Length: 141
Image (cartoon, rainbow, N blue to C red):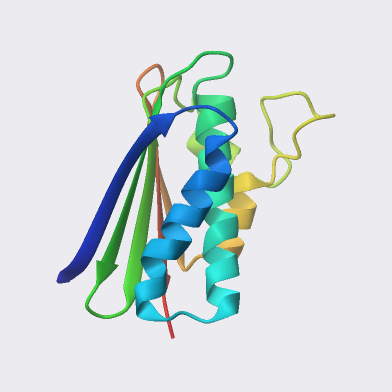
């Protein structure tokens, strides 16, 4: 697939940067004139992926989150959210609804389920103690 445009951002794993990531991706993707529903879906999935990197990837420490967004000629968008944090021991288990490693009073364990609901494809690559990359793909109408 031919890439029409690409954006790459790096930011500290602070919760305040989650909204920045959402807005940056939606602004970048707006060049394809997506529907409001498509933008909302993308922003929600990005929010979940970035929040996972910040909360679970780095836990109580600061690190770098790398956000890459690609627009392909066929109106496919690909968003990659990468951390070099603690990684995920069991990706299949982590993808199950309601599974969480955090405090169940604070976390619902629905992040990957939400991403899968709003995107066409979600891939998770993770190595314990080396980090996680979540790749989100969506074809726009």
